[in-house]
Image 1 (cartoon, one colour):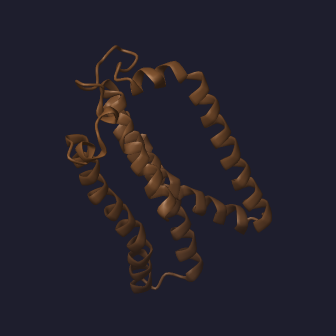
Image 2 (cartoon, helix red, strand yellow):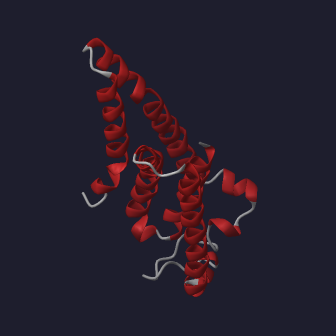
Length: 176
């Protein structure tokens, strides 16, 4: 559970590296965090259809390995832009992030007292507990409603899987 949150925290600094795309990058970070919860309902569908657990594990490990290898390739292909960004040279559009070499050029104490850090802290303090609370109680609320309606257990299980597949589809709202 903490891996997704830590990945999301790392993604919070991305919009400050590319200010002209900040809104898109913030929305994508949030949606990808929510979208990551589709993995386990997908595993349940595959497992229920007869896929062995070991096969699911190796498939997931393979996807992770390919993902991280492609990330390394992407870093190497964009090395020049990364170096410009670290030097405070701005993004592709020539925008300068801030005066004085960017946030990364400041001492750690100044970074903690910056507006960027405050914004990241506020978004994290609101977004992560909100997501975790929602995802933690959603099954309980649906089960309570289903029990009051005397819904059969097989229907409850199907509903749980369907809701688990629908929740991560927030990425569809990014273009809006």
